[in-house]
Length: 224
Length: 224
Image (tube, rainbow over all chains, first blue to last red; front, side):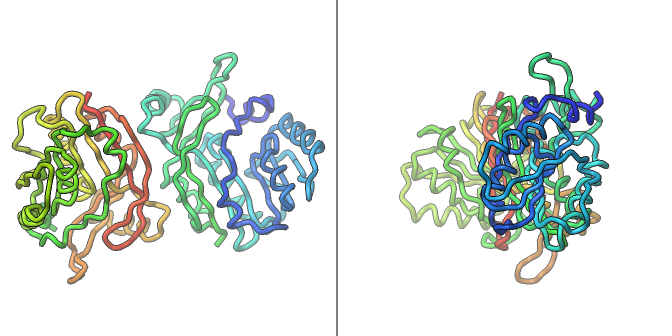
């Protein structure tokens, strides 16, 4: 299970994008802000924000997704055209303090090791301006669901991390990648240990690519 | 900090009762059901359910609260008068399968040891009929709040359990009792390991006696 390779080489249409940008984002983003969508996939959020007058850059590790993003972006009318580029979220090609706001939606869940997640949040902090915001939406551990409870327990010997599950290719049934579901404590410390204060927090319920209902969090961190 | 003694001897008006019965209760309770409110304090919920036509018994360890419950109950018109009695939730004076539905609201939070909490849930299961329901509402660990985050960490050497905090007497400032805040995993296993299936689950936000906003859970377990 070479996880980074899966996300690098899978076809764009295999990338799940079920989590939608919540209204609370616009309480923190001001018209004309420089926004980066980290793990932008096919660029739906970037398109939306480009149309709304934000300066938007979408980054992803997956080239097929970026190609799709470019193509579908060119078909649309934007107030400001978004840019798309291939980059590793733990090593972004931007100077310190470039952006007003960074977005990560259902992205950290795809990062299978705690240590890399910490590097990614530190990196997001670095490229934000002082006082800039990180808008984070991701999946929560859903112990009340019998399906997830059993998967957390059964998959633990392979994932080695509580709350992680193995996701399968919907066509072939092969093991595809590890998806991590977070506890509130885990996400909160991921932010506060890497330069953010918690500005906003809400429990949500999301739907996964397979239609399961799942706990989720929407958090806004402020670069301290 | 002799915890059981605090709850046994404190004055009725010092018992917090900020969590209200949610509408979802009535999806599981049928008119005429036998209901027990475990940790009923001054009997507000019992009164409400007695007026609505349920056969209600409220139990609590605190005699002053039960006296208040009796007094204020007598002043009201009920379709069916509630009974109140003093009992230890881990050793209830009822036969197996007596009740259709049991209620525990912000009660487990006052039980400072995991082992006693397990005994209490087993006991609730025992006195329910097969297929009966446990309606449980309690506090969740609220790591996104700086106040609670610091209390969980600072109070840990004394409470010896993550997510527990020391609550102080609002008049004297003395240490009064330990309040435990749960994780979803903790509450789910408390139920499924002691005879319940999870029938309903919802994240909530409650207000504490001191006015703090706090995560909460409303769970309905079904005796399997």
